[in-house]
Length: 293
Ligand SMILES: Nc1ncnc2c1ncn2[C@@H]1O[C@H](COP(=O)(O)OP(=O)(O)O)[C@@H](O)[C@H]1O
Ligand SMILES: [Mg+2]
Figure 1 (cartoon, rainbow, N blue to C red):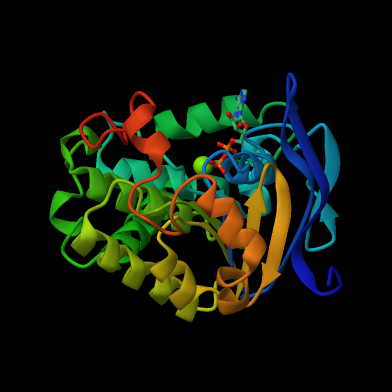
Figure 2: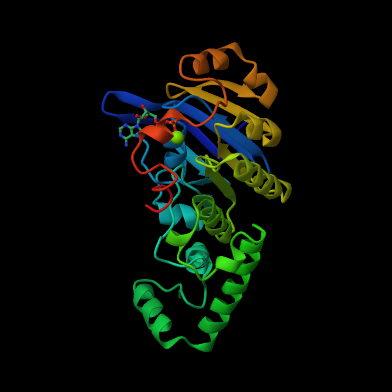
């Protein structure tokens, strides 16, 4: 299974005090594959994604991307390696415009503005930002053009709001900005943690169509999602977790019908049913407060 994988995580383990949030998980994704991770709240899904994308450090295990060891790299190095993600509770820079939020995603790709020279690179980067030579201005203009194209993927949702600060946007629009920012990275792998959390039915359908379009572009996508309809429609393969471990893996239908999966959900909630309990219990996750963190 691991041969030919674009991203390969093996034996991933993370302990929080007495809790083993992720317990020896193996995960392999092929190029162009759409893999969904499901499981009841507290199963360890977000922690697993945090470990793969460098937001958290694993106690044991290894992650390889295209044959390169990226275990426990910093989020910045992960971004440079081509791992882009969105967050379960949405994270955008509230005081920055839509344009600037998405431009941040382009940062790792800057060449003229970010000279690749040892030691003095940060100083040169500041100088070039102040002096703004023609090469830097041309690069920025090209990136802005690209941001407009990425944002246009979301129809008329964001384009008319490019210059608005994201704190003024609806919750669903902030989540769209997050995806646009991840796409601006030109990721090798796109990691989406519950992109429809907190969205109403029509927003969910719209997001599903956007994720479907990303899949049809041939992107490699890792998705955590509670809404099983989306998982069933989009996934090439599904992995189910409970108590930090993988309890089932296979085609969407096989995993949905697996007795271990049904039992895991029965202990917590119905499969794919409504909002995860944590969304209403945890502070800062309501539609009013969510998004800007
Ligand atoms: N930073 C943390 N400190 C302590 N416990 C944590 C932390 N992050 C997650 N956990 C615990 O790890 C387990 C898995 O959580 P999480 O990965 O968020 O699950 P899921 O995304 O599947 O709902 C839970 O028991 C959770 O309480
Ligand atoms: Mg989670």
